[in-house]
Amino acid sequence: MRADRTGWIAFLVALALALVTADCARRGGPPPIARGTPCAACGMKADDLAFACERQVGRGWRVYDAIECLIGDVVGTEGDAVATPAGAVFLADYDTETLHDADSLWVVKGSFPTPMGGGYAAFLARAAAESIAAQTAGRVDRLAAFVAVKTARAE
Image (tube, rainbow, N blue to C red; front, top):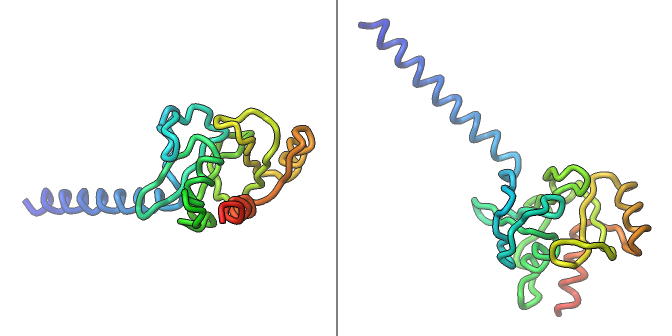
C-alpha cells in the first residue's frame, strides 16, 4: 500500500513541476499569433504574419494585423499614449515572421504594400531594414520613435 501511495505522490509532484515549468516558459513572450486572428484595432484578420504584432495589456495579449494598427491603439483616439510600447510589444521580423521584443527590431516606414497600407515593417537586422528603406523611399527607426511622432501629430 505504501509503495502505491509513494508512486502516486511522485506522479503528482512531477505533474506540478511540469505545469510550473510550462507556465514559466510562457512568460518569456507572447503566445504565437494564429493566422486569421482578428486585429484588436480594426477587426481585419491577421493573415500575413510578416506584419502581425502583439501588445501585452494586463495579463492578456492584443493581436494586430499591422504595425500601424498597434501604433494607433497605443496612441489612442485622443492622441494620448495609453501604453508604453517598450517591453510590452512584440513585432514580427518581416523576413522570418518570428515575434521579437520591439526594442530589438528596426522598423521601416516606406512605400510598399502592408495589410493596412501604412508601409510599416520590422526587421531584426538593421542592414535589411536599411535596404528596404532605400528601395521604398522609407526611413528606419525604432518603434518608440514612430509612436512619438504619431503622438506629437495627434496633439
